[in-house]
Length: 235
Image (cartoon, rainbow, N blue to C red):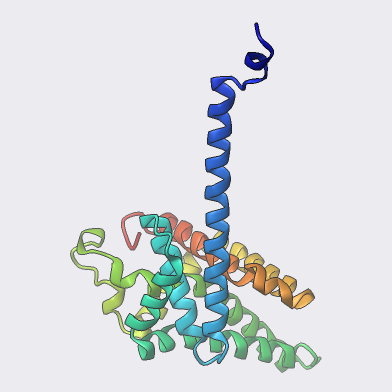
């Protein structure tokens, strides 16, 4: 056997190298899309008042990426920003976000008091804050996916989430949160608290995908809660 033939890689080695190279390129493409979408989310949310619309557009892009294998996530993000009704989206997502901020402020106020009345208010505030945090993932998911649901995915008597009023959608999400409180509730709390703590420790990590990672985890948790609570509804 010649030296040249001994130095040539075998067909199996070349095949494995090709597979490895393909997987590396796919992983790099996924990472690029993820970071690009995260950056687009941060830029769109900079004015703060556009935060609900930006979050909704990111959830839409994530959901289409998962269901349709869409790699042009930034394009889908921009399309969602342009096509989703801004007033309804801001109302649907902005009110729960404002409720979370208000709940945190109330808990911070009453936790410093020792009076019995304030302790009662503290307990009520903590309960309301817990329900709101446990429900917000469902609000984000259903607001993003509502128009995409077909009538075949719903029972004949059940309206699409896009047809629900804000109050009806919030009531639906609160019911899901209470029903899954011991299952998805702790998951939502860990996800939100973990992302918040990491970002406060090093704000630069927000550029590395923490906000989008939080949305993705909340989306998966909400999907799990939907499958668990209502196997035939709103999947």
